[in-house]
Amino acid sequence: MPTPYGSRGGMAFSADELRVLRRALAIALHPESVPRHPGPERDEEVRECLRLAEAVDEAAREGGRLRAFLLADLARYRAALPGAVTGYAERLQDALAAGYRPGADDLAALRRLCAAPAGREEAGRRRALLARCERLAEQDVRIRLADRGSAHDGALAGRGRLLALPGGRASAAPGAAGPDPKPKPAPGPDPVAPKPDPKAPKGPGTPGRPVPTPGEVFPPRRKPTPPGAVRGPEARPA
Image 1 (spheres, rainbow, N blue to C red):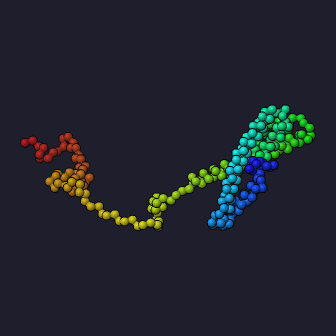
Image 2 (image 1 turned 120 degrees about the horizontal axis):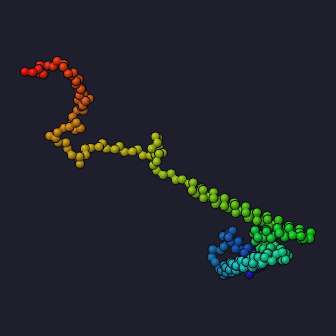
Image 3 (image 1 turned 90 degrees about the vertical axis):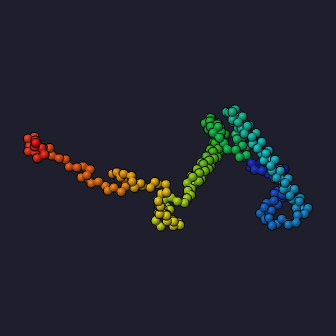
């Protein structure tokens, strides 16, 4: 069974497991190397690959449990600072080798340790460990910002994608491509409209009567006759 972590934090395999892993990689890269008619040898290879896959899964689970234990132990030593300086530095280095990324608590603890009085060699080890943790923390921040920017650009690209729909102003423009519109038929008489009655009186607004002139609508006013003026024969007394 492969061990969860090696000297540098990676998974370690035995010689037999490496043989099976090499054969599985060769099959993945060159599928034509697999015989068309499976036999006992091929069945044994399949069983070995399945056993290796199960062992890798178990090693990954064991690695997760080991990492959780390392983080819990590191938190205990960090809470016991400054008295547990040596143990905290060792646990932090082990956690970093296992893929741990230092957080704000670790950076603050290391800065306090670097500010505390210590010997020349111990102060140099603390500063080196602080510089390593600051470099890893900066890399993590840059990776998160890059991932956030790429996700934001992808969201904007998805929202900015427009689809051309039929119709609109482009279809009405002269020279636009598209089928010629069919001519509309001439409007016929409305069957619902009532027919005019020839005996009905025609008023000013009735169809068929000429429009009255301004003189007919507004007749000229008569000038008033002054008193004592000579009237016509119809005004003389009998």
